[in-house]
Amino acid sequence: MNFEDRIKREPRKDRYTKTDLIKEGYLIATEKNLEVYFAPFDYINKTAPVVIVGITPGWTQMEKSFNTVITELHKGYSYESALKKVKSESSFAGSMRSNLIKMLDELGLHEKLNLKSTANLFDLDNDLLHSTSALRYPVFSSGRNYTGSSPSPLKSSLLWNQIETHLVPEMCFFTDALIIPLGKNVNDIFIELQSNNKLNSNYILSGFPHPSGANGHRAKQFELNKALMINKIEQWKRESKAN
Image 1 (cartoon, one colour):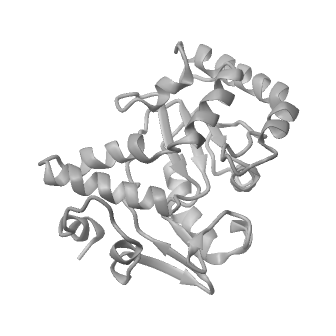
Image 2: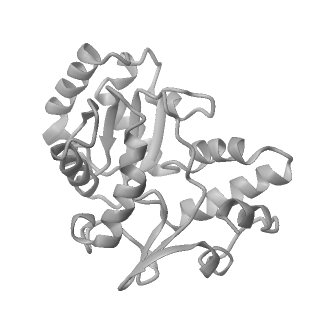
């Protein structure tokens, strides 16, 4: 039974527990204290000029993705349309999204896209944004959300295999896109991929801090790299065929 069929057999609930979803039927791979589980994050907006990349979905995003898909399926919608809705419902939700919008607006990205605010990027029907994760499927370290640093994806054969298997082919759909890695750990992954010529002619917006409220250095990091990021966006807008 594939993952799609498994999801279609799940009962509808208001809320799913870790016991419901973090189970053998959705387990993809393990390495020491790391576990990778499937979650329905497979929709790719292949024509988007902007790609925002986190490290990996956490438990909250995982639960919301299953909840969204199962709810949509019970309403009679197709699995494909449910996957698309997951991206809007689950991507960088809550205060993280608010912080992300604030910083992107300060960089003037909305003006380059002819938008009132980058908040419009997160509208369900917006075709300008593809949101994803360097590690597409949820990774847990000793049962907790993996944060991207211990171990580094660059030093873990399991994690790097996930990147090679999912992220690299995903990025091949894009040409001249502005890729925004959230935080140093994700940025390091993209620098490594770029050095190995695995990013097409896409542009990396290096230096963008992770928008989590737990990142106490977010404002300082942003101000430190702000001018360079504005210049990179200007270069992307000037040179990109996609814009």
